[in-house]
Image 1: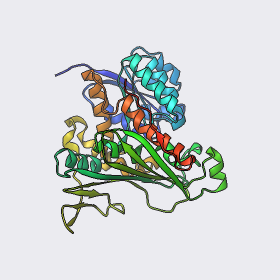
Image 2: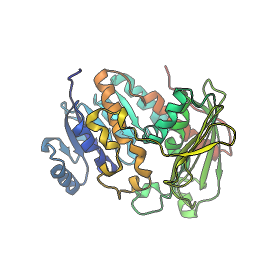
Image 3: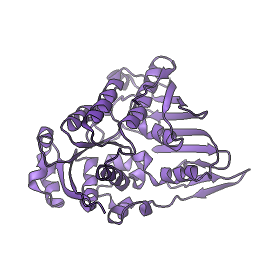
Image 4: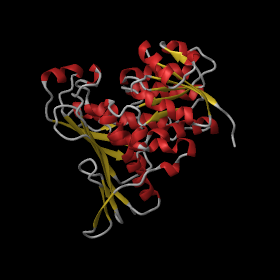
Length: 372
């Protein structure tokens, strides 16, 4: 067994603090540090998790200077992702970052280039690809139970007007951060997005629309997939639409189909021929994890179940330990992560280009190819 151990610093202690105990429990982690600008939060978490004072930071620049930090996990506000990711890679650190990779195509390309030059692991920590619900459907696809996939649909509908969300979210264009709705559709077809046509629908209030110059309450996109005759459809909404939170995917095959539940805890539906339909509760995914972190798939292991990202994220489907396991395994094994820079750039730019299409009245937009 590989005995290598690494040190990791988690940057951003909102949602980010949920990863502290997972990393601490991982057998290939030597030490865990944290970085937050809030000194009170830093001291509280340092005591709660018995963290090494020497690896607790209030300044991100100080993390970058440390030769004894092997990896950085960025869980900060969206506008900071590209800047921090580039700084981390250029400081010779393995780098994980919550979604999205960046807010512009240019920044995505710069991160892909920086990752190649650094020859370090990069991983976009996309929770939607590791929920128990998605892993269940992915297994149906990989084992052939779905048969030939004919169509996929995703949605991410959320009310970000509720308390707890940062100011920069107000009026945020729906598809500009579309990876939750898009990435499962691409992953289950084992491909990337080539081009997109997207339409905006409805109208935001004047205040919200003025923030980013984006008027739409809803954006719905259809993607042409590489080397595939399947069309993927994704819809996203963040403001001025009334609905229970929904982050979903549906997949339709010629042998079996899977539809996400309409309401939380209503159970998903499997169609297996004719008019046959069965409501199912998907199994946990702890068996896919190493023993030391398997229990972190359980809902009760979330320390702050009132955090807005958890409340409105349906618990993230037990995905957190899977993200940590894959990131650390890629480092230890000296390989690319499952959501490496090239793939993350495609997932992210699919949403960015979708929003561009909507703003251009549904014009087809080509999505950049980041492969060498």
